[in-house]
Length: 315
Image 1 (cartoon, rainbow, N blue to C red):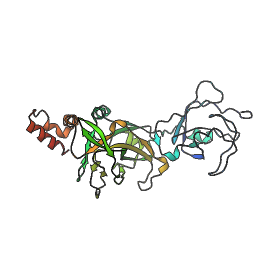
Image 2 (image 1 turned 180 degrees about the vertical axis):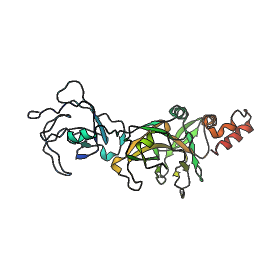
Image 3 (image 1 turned 90 degrees about the vertical axis):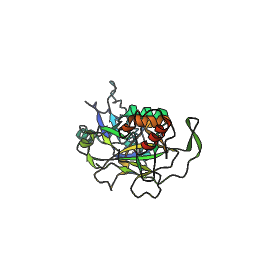
Image 4 (image 1 turned 180 degrees about the horizontal axis):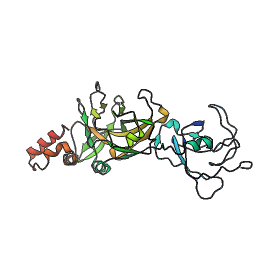
């Protein structure tokens, strides 16, 4: 490391935003001598993350994410920094190093842009998840219960964001409910067409998103492969995982792929069904769905139970 002067100790955290100028495999990336244009072969030197290169560029990395919180650690004169990722992002960004001169960082350090998503009603979701959540799909489309709701923090208040949700296959299996439990029944059927649900309030400022619970309750599930209403098309008896996405963009028609941030809550996975299989799930829906409150405490008669089960499928 001879010949390199230590970088100045920051007074507070710096935020390095997505501005990838050097892209190398994560395992081999450890040193650079200068900024390189895309495709240019860099000259290398042995330098540790946090060292200052001769041209004054702060070496920050490795990073799996489009924003990195860079904090001082202890009294190390070489600015011992650490990347503290909190989000998921596209595979294309998983080997990117983000290098920017400190004077640019100083101008942006006050701007917060590290979105985080918190699942609403997480306790209820965990109750369902423990029993094996089921979601009914119909030809005409059915809303989910529990509905997918979330709170957002850490957004740039003035910037505009688009919030999206999609539901993807959790595995490549088909399931059956046997002996009061779900079990693998074979290989998954061919996937249905993939669709992304855009929250109707998009685009909106970070301040607007953070001021409320973001509700995706209008999303509907269907098994109609010819659906023309924009519903999410799923296969019955297959397991799925919802995913939240945040994109910093002004135009829904121009979504920059590189700025996608994806958030997954494992407790929201479910098996798509055309009728509830597990009585425990049916009862949880009745007990917690406000649209099913008229069907509670109806007694234990077999006729009533069958009637309730049929009616609950309406919601």
